Amino acid sequence: MTLLNEIERYRYAERLLGQRDALGALYMLEPLLDEHGDDPGVLLLAARAYFHSAQLGRAQKTLGTLVERDPSDHYARFLLGRTLERASKPEQALPHLRMAAAMAAEPDYADSVTRVERKLSL
Image (cartoon, rainbow, N blue to C red; front, side, top):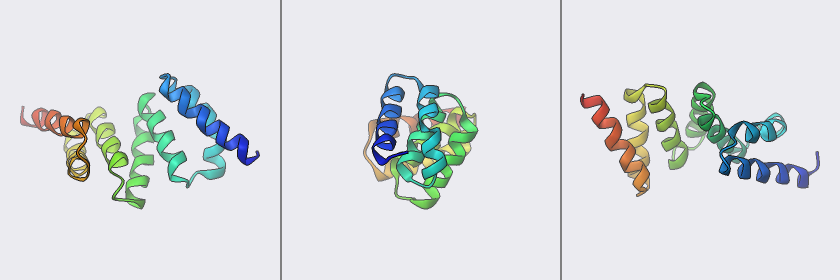
């Protein structure tokens, strides 16, 4: 596979994910994951597709790897928290969501912290 084909494949997977076709995005990413499975960009796009296709175990594993490699990646940490929340693990989700919210002033991050804190206080 040429570099141009790899870039085109990655960009097409991004577009598919933007069109809510997470499984199509994963199909496009398969060769890239095989050849560049340690690239953070490829892993994050795959994790997003896993999340949106409800493959929460795969999303959690991939995002855990990304957060371990780069603890300052607030988006990966946020998505890990959302994945854990969606997997009915709010106690595990909350620290990641709080950290993401502390690292970046994103409204979605703060909203997620509030939502999970409410779930845990019931």
